Length: 329
Ligand code: SAM
Ligand code: SF4
Image (cartoon, rainbow, N blue to C red; front, top):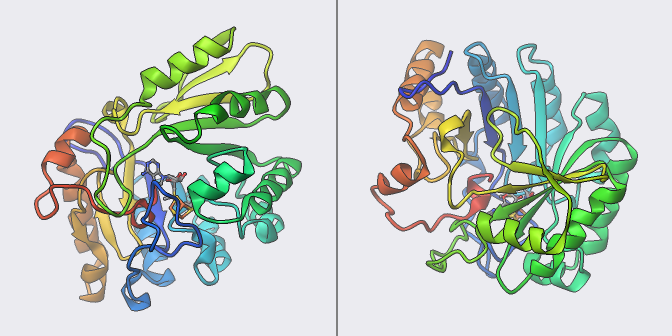
């Protein structure tokens, strides 16, 4: 079992399979994009599968595939097929911007992959295109409708941005009147690839829920699943749900069950740390399973108590300058 010194059991691995993206969302990277790592520095599929097999024997039973845009990684379905054949992995979920996903829907279902988090920051085409710096709204909406038709367990991720998509909050929740989905409003985090984060987050959990309660009646609090980062609600009578993820105010760290693997093999035990060590280097230096496990277990044992401690512990880059595209969310 993978457990930290505070007794938290780690059973969920998030794998960012690429740093490449076909979007340049304002909150994730600058307009000019980010510098991508070389292909040879990325973990190859053999290395990823080896790590997942090893960690599954230690209790990891859920994986999320993310990025960058995961469907930009060449032959992603080959990796997903191999991961879906690992017996001890109960659930594989994917976070995607939805631009390239539609073509793989049937294959995903065949592999038993039914959990998709689709990022949609606005229901308004021009706002969506401005935030993502693309013209892909229709394409993404098309994907949303296709996933719904095929009965995926669908969540919408929406980062709340002051002055940009506040008017989307209520219409997003109202999607739940008709659709059995969960919309999750995410506090904006500093991982925008440029180190230019505003110091004060206006739209934190309290302001988001305040805005919702001022505009909608009959909001019912739901039980949150163990390890869930979202605080969840339903409007009475709706089939869908909504939640708020306090990703910046970090009130969920006490029940954190996550480990992160970046595209180039950095192990992160907290979203806010700057990376604990590079497991790719160990693998390529010929490490045995026991040596890999010792290194990962030690990193987990020393996991920061919460995201604030992890942020304070950053050594080389005190200020966060990374893009979320290299972390995976
Ligand atoms: N490209 C895929 C996508 O956008 O869904 C997967 C990778 S993306 C980094 C994963 C999630 O992180 C997305 O839902 C995105 O909205 C969220 N995200 C990215 N940058 C963020 C930031 N600065 N603050 C909060 N969430 C962020
Ligand atoms: Fe790409 Fe996702 Fe980052 Fe947007 S949030 S730029 S889609 S990685």
